[in-house]
Amino acid sequence: MDQTKEQNDDYGYNLFPERKKSKYQKGSIGESLFTFSHKCQIMLHVAVETNPYAKVLLGALKNSGCAVYKDRHFSCEDCDGTVSGGFDATTSQIVLCQNNIHQQAHMNRVVTHELIHAFDHCRAHVDWFNNFKHLACSEIRAASLSGDCSFSNEVARFNFGLKKHHQECVRDRATRSILAVRKISKEEAVKTVDEVFDSCYNDHEPFGRIPHSKKDARFAYRDFENRDRYYENL
Ligand SMILES: [Zn+2]
Image 1: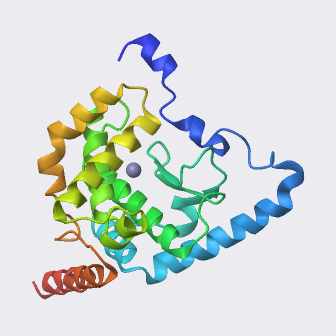
Image 2: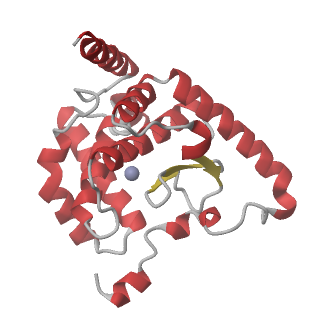
């Protein structure tokens, strides 16, 4: 990447203004932020303790040597625009946008989506900043495996469709995620997603399948626990 591009590209950090400033600059709206922050913490707690998608990922991260601690690795913050969350690879922290997440189901999906990025970061040497293919691959997996494109979400968006539609939704969301954080053209983003789509869409780790519902995720969690048991018996 050349110097000019590096200077023009802030890697999406402009979407997360609190990443740059001190914690004590929140000022007079502190009280309402506390409320948002408190609600965010509670929903995060519910997600990591009860959501089967999150539990599969937390277990897999731990087994891969990247144990996730709620206080160290998650941060509830105010974000710009409509962004819901992000994975900050430089600090290995998941940012949850407390001003944009208002429902538990949404929190569950954001936590799951970002944990997939954390899992990819843990298991592979992902070059998030310079290799668009690496970023595209993780965005494809996060969109596909987090339930972002699951049937009920799509129905809610009046995008009633079949299996083929899941793939189109994943393509579309992955492309939009890249465009949100990197200054590249839409054509370049679409092309990059295309290039890695098949191999990344078919990589279902650590779920072993595309979990289309909580029920699927619960099965994946059961299988995951049995995997552990198998290792313990060796
Ligand atoms: Zn993402």
